[in-house]
Amino acid sequence: MSYFEAVPSANGNNVLPGNPCKLLDFSLLSLADGETYEAASGDREVLAVIMGGKGAFAVNGSTFAGVGGRPNVFSGKPHSVYIPCGADYSITANGSLEVALCSAPSDLETDPYVIGPDKITTGVWGAANFSRNFHQILTSTGQPDLPAARLIVGETYTPSGNWSTYPPHKHEKDDLPNEAFHEEMYFFKVNKPEGFGMTRLYSNGMDEIYTVRDNTILMIPSGYHTVVSAPGYTTYYLWILAGNHRTQAVVEDADLDWVGKTVPTLRELGL
Figure 1 (cartoon, one colour):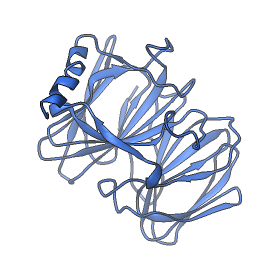
Figure 2: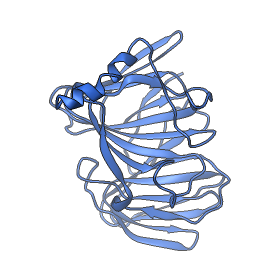
Figure 3: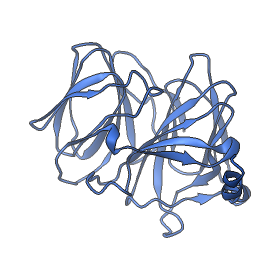
Figure 4: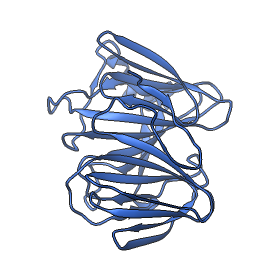
């Protein structure tokens, strides 16, 4: 079973070569100017996150023109479109367009909507050399006007030489309030073609380390996970979660959780 794949980036909708997750799915849509992609969401909800470019969306009779604008993920906050289950939809490119299509099972009947940059929550997690910047796109907190059945989506930027999702954590069983079951995917990009990072996924009897490059994806049905950027490069990842509910709770690796407890002190020191 493969937990890490290179996602094709050819023209059209590029699906995952393999996927160990039972709930989550992902594809990367690449369109040239004027091209249109048509699909149906069926029994799934879809969040279309614009990686770069601008497009027009039509969803069950609703139209959203000129959605997007950033040239790439390293140049601003995203625009996204929520597509509910049972929807026929189309995406037409205004210039070159790249869209991440994230999906999970849903029976939630709701209208489609756009999530613009004004609705994105930003901030910093961690401290010192495990600090990283985040964009919360579709989460369960602070966004009551953005309904979803399962999907939780955001973006993280890990600076040169820094660690992310550190201390490593897991979320593989429902044991609230301590832990909530969520599958997760990290879709990566790197700010320069030659750049790279590393990601580790480990659990009982498994310990895998992979090289992060542009358009690679880590699929996490279970296990602890973490990411590091090579010095000189910023790595980006779109994080996508789905579980039995939208309450988030994680358990950190007990051998490393002491590092997280140093965050308040490190921040007081300006680190």
